[in-house]
Image (cartoon, rainbow, N blue to C red):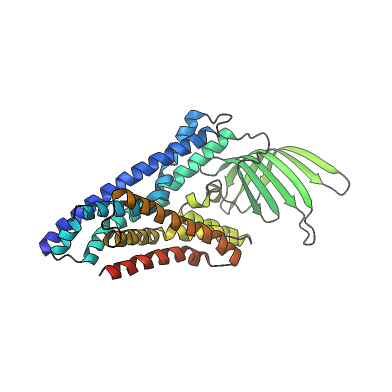
Length: 365
């Protein structure tokens, strides 16, 4: 019997991985179509239909990473469900293979998917996402004046800044607006406002600075406004190109290391970094979330869905995935409002999902 276990493991692995491939292909195809339609609606200036298709292609790894937990869920449920429909699970169990041994055989391909997802989400998807976002921002945003509808706003000390577009790598900025508040502790009056068409990072041995070009500044005096223009101006601010490289990328599309660095930066600036901590823990613990979803899917196959039709299994997989996502999305704002730890908010749905799966498996035994 022991000699046949590797054969059984390989058979289950092939079935589950094939089902996962089918699931990711179908779901990703639908996601790409909707993304392309959405991007085609945003075409303006130099951002045309070809650039929209290029953008969707470059953000493909990020989309795959986002779908991996539900791919593992659907693939495990469908792949193992097909075996149950053909009575293959009953035959394998009749040969003396325990239920938990079968569960481990299903979890092994899921672990492979989780490791691949971590590599994809840390090293491949974020750089491509950053390049795509930067290219789109440069092509669709002007650099002659502030484009408040796009770009990114940030607070740095007593300054609010807006950047229309950031070149890949973060060393060149386009359309930099700065609004400086009064440094007096009892005043929030606007002290000055300036706009620079571009900015380049000048590296030095100890830190560095930004060289602003074509700067127009307005200083607000008590009785009048003084306007001045300059070809260049040095801007000393604690904001490196590495930090700016991820500035335009949504937190849920950034790398784990980038999220941690940005959270530390926000805390050093005295700002709330809970959103970045939330996404940091969510990405770091995504393997556990995937594992809990797969465990719950396996418990369904050995329990209430053993005799269910394929369509019903797909419906259950979609339902479980939606419930899991809704709980995660509800806990994020709730944790920010109630002061709940971001780590705890991420762990709650994972623990609930894993607990339900283990409880269902114990009942099967």
